[in-house]
Amino acid sequence: MDADELFRRYAAGERDFCLAELSNTDLSGANLSQVDFSGANLKKATFSRAILSRATLAAANMELTDLCEADLRRADLSGAEMIGAYLIAANLSLADLIGTNLRGANLSLSDLIGADLIGAELSRANLSLADLRGADMSGANLCEANLSSTHLYEADLREANLLKANLQKALYNEQTKFPEWFEPASAGALLIAPQVCLAGIDLSKANLPGVNLREANLSGTNLSQADLVWADLRGANLTGANLHGANLSQTNLRGANLKGAIMPDGSIHD
Image (tube, rainbow, N blue to C red):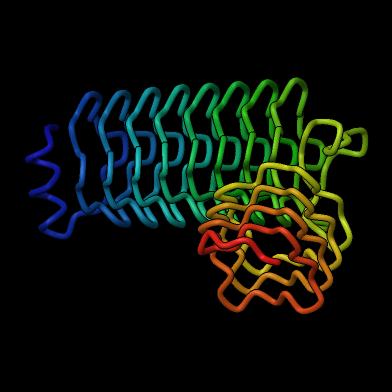
């Protein structure tokens, strides 16, 4: 099957393309929402910027497949072979990735909010800057994975293999669940919670809307271009902090110490 035949049949209302042979096919930008590619061979196919929301890709071969910026919201990718796949900036929110093989895949900047990654194979995967809020990664293999600067609020990593994983500047909160033996702070992860000490830390461009950092020590912290919309910074120590270009819309700064801080407009607070 080639791309033209697929598009023609899809336009006619067909959705069942189980076991289809589409390896190396260019389907970039295609709208294939709710398509069924179960067990299909999609190895090295190109789906960049394609719409695959609610698609079924269970047990599909997607090794080295290009899915950069693809819309995979609520897609079923359970058991798929996605070794070395390219998923940069892909939207995988609420996707089913149970038991999916993503070894060595590039998921940097991807949206994995609420995704189900139970038992997924993610060894040596690149998840840097990915949004994993509320994701279930219990039992996943994250050995040597790059989780730097990820958002792990409310994520479940119980029984996950985090051996040699990179969690530098990964953000987590008190609801994040780690394996009992794992110490996130020792791995370089940063706890976002009231009264924490983040003095001098580089949090530039951090995505922190609605966070509770009440009475936190943020003296000298670099928060330039950070998103702090609706954040609670009451009573926080922000002396000498860099807030240049930060979004402080609806941020609660009541009682915060801003002496010497660089404000969003570049001025120095007296």
